Length: 257
Length: 134
Image (cartoon, rainbow over the protein chains, first blue to last red):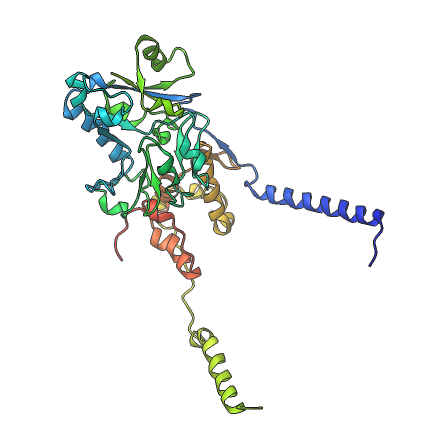
């Protein structure tokens, strides 16, 4: 069959129109007619969430424990003793391992001995987001680096990319290691990566992160883009440090030493 | 035909094996799924308030799509409130909204899912409501 230019263009045009019609038919199926999706009125909103860890205010072992336990309980974080399989959202380690680039031999003994609180830094330039092949981890508009457990395929690229060790893989079935489940929040399943999510589920309900609430002011949380926020006031009044900032990840957790 | 007998016997055995599931299940009627919506939470509501988020027919056929969309709106977009065509507001949450009324996962979810042999992995992570063992 031969076809002249005019016929070809006619057929091409008609199929393009049909094609677009098909797309709009798919779009129309997306949402039930008349339904709307809104954000919670009470939700805490920010341009860029950030946290300051005031390490001077952590004095006793109890101060650390209550912050860490608040998170672990609310988020159903499994408690696994073997460090190779442990799942960590917020945890402690030594000064030397928190700030390997800032550590020096003659630092005050008190600092050297003190445990430091660590959590996901919710980097402004997060390497984990860049490497995720399925976009399971992504940066929200308010700066929170989120982990979508529905999409995670457990490839562990993000764990290799994160310079802070903030990500944990579920090597063991997590439900067997949760003493008391919080029925309001899901657990995770075998074979996904999890981490701190800055309590996005609590922010959406108008509550501060669980660790901040339990910390008695030792953890300060707020909007970095708002010059009147508490974090900005503390940042402008004190000299603070960040973990491995030379890597260019622009971490959003500051430490007040 | 060379070796005709062997081929025909082979064919008969082959067809028999392939159609095994068909004739094995012939005449055996599987009980029709009968999902129950008679949980104490639903019975507590007034008769005219016993409505799901969307009409029953839609929920029956398309609930998996609705759940998929809810998941994306909440996890990826951070919007948690769903307003249906009647203007009623719901918090989009499988664990805290759907299952608060449908607290009978076994008689509500599993009933049809088992019948249709679909295995959604919701409950690998989401915590199902506690039910009495039956």
